Each structure stands twice: as structure tokens, then as C-alpha cells.
Image 1 (cartoon, helix red, strand yellow):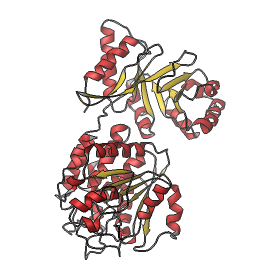
Image 2: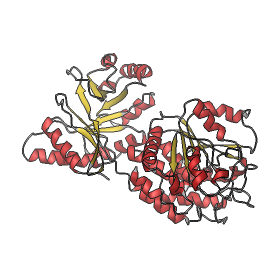
Image 3: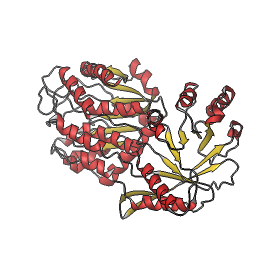
Image 4: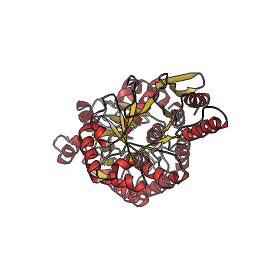
Length: 493
């Protein structure tokens, strides 16, 4: 997370954002924001509140910052199978309508737009009241936040309340109902930045007037808000490499659309793709850098029954710092499994064993052969309806067609354990990535001495470096130790 924040928090605009930063807090907040996104169940509804109507004398007064970051977040959420809603002001609706139309043409992703009137109490707004209870996570990016006097201000302390909808109510509702909120901003006057209100008052010009009052659960500060949006996307991809980050060329095409629809640079006021006074290429370069940080910092490793002294999961931030998490235990049904481990997976001989595992088992796997008849699939669907929130379902050596048929029956597969072949790289791996199915590679029995071990350990290490591999399963304790040493000796940055 530190490398991500280094890219987005250099205060290129010189507006004093450095004074609001707190490296330990910011690293923790970014990590937790990414985890909040990853914890959302498939088909969750997520709302992004955005649009800053601050360009004086322009029609519309919509500024460019925040728009590309919004759609980057939408892309990441879409890859997590979420339904995305954008909430903005009526005066910004034309720009966002054009951007959504173009976005759908470019990505085939659907986004819902909700526009609200300015400067009125929204407690009786039927559209908002219907939407509020459906949202599983709220994100605000470059969105004006009401100051303590209830007014909305630009960085120059110009009152824009006549254009801004009172969407702070969404965060207030979220806090009351324990729904996660993520706020992304660059000046202290944005929704959710009440978390640094006192610092804003002291260190930001006009801070006593403009400081936003509403706080958030997860705060992401950036030199430019778009970059904060990209950072959240990169953090999600860092923790889950199956998630894709939007491509810079797509962002460039979207930027052209927003300007054609009337958006302007918020500082210069010009009708161009500049963002906060900087050419678009500066933002695209930051996005490019964030994309190339997507090598995960850790890999999960699971081993066979009998290896009770599990090596720790090394989480390396530098050669001298190691944060440890236990490895998982992988076992076959009937083994005398030690469930004192923090994570356990069991492969069952048949679907009738679904009812037996204890609450300490987090993953249950079934071989593909057990899922080739409708009766067994019905049993699994019924079991998942009862236990799906507590135990994840995995399949072993399933074909692409079987995976698709299982999903079509309404069964959600979390893990696919398979024996590696180059054929799986063609369609199977991309399908698993698209569906957020974790891939575990089973290396099978290996020799404990001689050239075979060297090759197998090297191959396993190579597998763990692949962003599409979540876990490698080995069958020998000595090889497990060798592989763990190989992982610990190589710091992934």
C-alpha cells in the first residue's frame, strides 16, 4: 500500500494536502477500503457519489476531476460482479449521461445514473429513499461535502450550494446502518473528509470555511481525486490479482467524451481534458504506474495433512520486515485433520459428506465427477442455500463446460483446484478470473530428493509468481519447506 500511496500523494498541485497525510493511517485506510470492496458479495449494489459543480460561469459547471476516477472504480466493481450506481446533481447529469453511454460502448458495462435537485432537503425524496436500503457500500470521490454551516464550498470558498444536491445524507444513513463508506478527496472540502476536518481548518487555505463536516469509515487522500480512485482500484487488484484495473486508453477516450459533454478543468476553467490544472497525460502516467504494481505481495500456500508445523505466510514490505499469517491446511475427507489452524479446506468423496464438516472448515471441495448428475447438483445447491455464507464451495479438476453449467444452476464456486496443464491457460483460467474463482494448483506427489525436487520447487515458485494462481498444493513436507524458503527469500515488491 505504501508504494501505491507514494504515487498519488506527492501534492503536485501544492494545495497543502501533505499536511493532511498520516502514512500509517493512510496505509491502513487504503488496505481496509480495498478489503471492503473485496468483501462485497456478488451482485451487491454500490453507489458512487461524485460530480463537483465548481466551474464558475460555465454551463454545465461540472469539473473534470473525479469523473475518470469514478469510472475506474465502476470497472473494478463490475469485475467483482457488483451493480454500480452513480449519484450526482441534476446540473451534472448531462455530462454523466454522455460518459455512461460512451462507457457502455467501450466496455459493455452497465451503470445506473441518479440525479438529484440542488439545495433541498432530500429526506422526502422518493428516488433516494428507495435507493438507500439497497446499497452495500458507499463511495464518494471529488464530491462537495457540506461544511459545518451546511453550505458547500469550492477551494476558493465560493458558495456553490445553489448547484449541489444534499447527498451527504447518504453517508449519514450509511453510518446509522453500519454500511461501509469510502471517501476520496484532495482538498478537505469533499464529502467524507470530515475525518480530517481539524487539520483542514489549520493547514488548508480557507479551511475554516470550507472544511467538510461529514466523516467516513475509510479515507483516501490524493493529490488529485482521480488518482485516489485509481489507487483504490490498484489496492483491490493488489489483494486480488483476478481483478482488472481499467486500461489508460479507455480512460483517455472517456476523458474526451466528458469534455465534449461540457466538463471543464476545475482550476483553469478550460474546455480540455486537463485535470486540476494538469494535462491528462500526467494522470494516465500515474494510472500506468499503479497498473504495474499489481504483483501481489503475498501468496497463499497450502499443504498436506501431517505437516503440523506450518511455515508462516510471509507478507514482505521490506527485507527486514515480515508480517506473518498462518498457512491453510488442505486435507482429504477422513484424515485426522488438526483444525486448530486458522484456515482449513477438505475435499469430500461425495456430496453426502456436505453435512459433516465442522464450523472450523472454510472450504469444501468436490471432484468434478461428483457434479455430473442433476441429483448431486441439486443437493449442492440446497446445501449452499443453507451454509453458503459460512463455507465456500470448491470444485476439483472441472472442465470449463462443467463450471459454466454449475454456475447456470445458481451454484457459486469460490475455488477451483486443478492439476496444471498448458491447456488450462486458454479459456479456463480467464473464465475463473472473470467469475472471481480462486485457482489452486495441485502439484501432486513429488520426489523428496534429486533433480526432480529442484525442478518441482522451481516450477511451484514460478506458479506462485503468476497473478492468476492463488495457492499451490504440495504433497511432501520437505518440498513444502523448500518452497516456503524460496518464497521468503524472494521479496515481492
